[in-house]
Image (cartoon, rainbow, N blue to C red; front, side, top):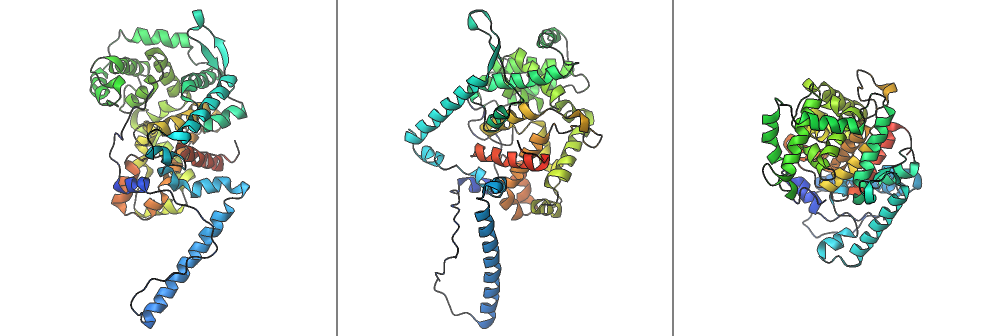
Length: 425
């Protein structure tokens, strides 16, 4: 499927837009700074003394920064390098900038296509056929979710033609581990049965459906096509989880899944995301689970860093910017290709560790991928946030973040994930 938002659906902070349009920095490791002097008027003794002090401070910072940048190139510091260079995710990576300037793309575009074909073939070899319909139709695939090779390749991104099969397999594997998890057949039966029942949420669903990603061709026509499918899925979901009902934010999740599945499988995926990926707690009445998730993010993921100190000074809590990130799984916050990359890993590694579930941490480790992505976005906007006042910081955190390098976003996310999980993967 194509990208649901051909253009950013939300406003973009001016400072973020300027950062994304600025060419990526060239990182050099020269030992000495330039000694070239610019002409100017004669300085007083006091002015020279002040200037020399500032130069000394800047020189010390530059030397420290240069030494750190150089040591980041060492094999053991790779994750630290990605986190230090996180701001580059807002700019086009080397090679893609040439394609952006050349409509034909040339050799760089051909190289990307070849790489994608190679990745697709690797995933084909990892897939195991578990069901085949008549004449080869309705094939279902299974993947070994414990394979280190599969985990590594998922972090690098699932080829789009394999994404629907992989996501379905990941959640299906999680469902098999839970004895109380409904089967595919039971969920399909429930979906059709619930279509004949009325829901108190139908009016609100009817209001929200036409304004959900309505720039996508699938969701443009009122009461037809994707809008009709989305209404039916949300209607069934609200009845299937009566304790939650319908909550704004669900529509964006359904829209993403409808880009890859029919209505039946979309309903199956949503119900399993609710029960197996912790969305039932995020969306529970009163949003106690959401508040617990954001508090966990504040305490264990960003607390103590310079950005955290800056946000504390500005009295900006994670609830001010993280609510939309967590409820929509970044649907309205980053470009669609970047969102899909986050979902790839969340679908695979979003299982909760029931052994460490507590009142303070109701999700166990199930939201670690979402926490890590949130931390990566903070890393990516670090320089902007440190130089911002309250208004600009809020604009940067709550607006659409124009991530142009999804690979770097996921490298930073993985670095944060490994740092806080305390193990390599």
